[in-house]
Image 1: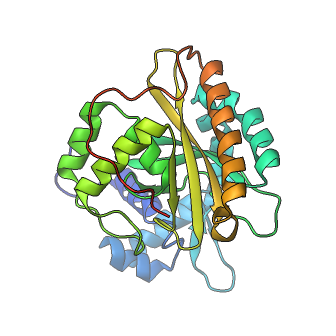
Image 2: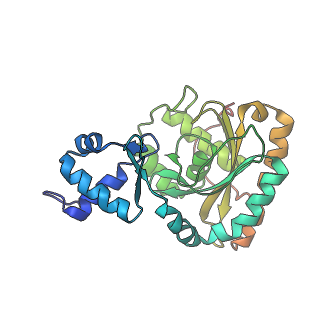
Length: 274
């Protein structure tokens, strides 16, 4: 339920914490006060309380605040709530060794893709994917994979309300093209992208199913463009990724064909975006 009137002290503290984002990880007191519309004195009191419990840290030189290390205590708890994370860990580590690439596990959170686990490549040239990273469901292989294998009702509602904004010059922003891309992903059983969300980054993604055949997650590889454009390497990565997606789905109880066959008609063919 949406609250009306002035926020109480707890709500103000929550607004302060939510102001720390990937594109703005540090704040000064006056900057944050202006951003939220609170007085500097209020912001200072809130930040000092949060600092006392390690929810924020303060840089001794710049005096700016950033999120504290206390959140790492919650990471294992959060991941334990997703049974798929526990089963995925060994598979992801093996997949990273087999391909030499960064592996990440993603779920649908609202209308976004959320990374819930990641195994970073050991190579010097690598693509990172931090836990907690988010992106819209229309951009990038992992996002499109999650969207494509979601229930039809969710896809229809998502597309009906969508006003896609380009993240790069390769982002799909046309709804008909996105609908056609969804159909292709369902038919071939995996998604791929190059520089749709981040320039210089390619990605491959496959679905993970539950015992009932419902989508649980997307297992993905983040690959630097230099290696992604190597067709042999991309083929090698896709082969191991599909095997890993099948194994993880089986561990989660799925006993049907993998990838799950596409039924119905979401639209026409679309060219693979490379």
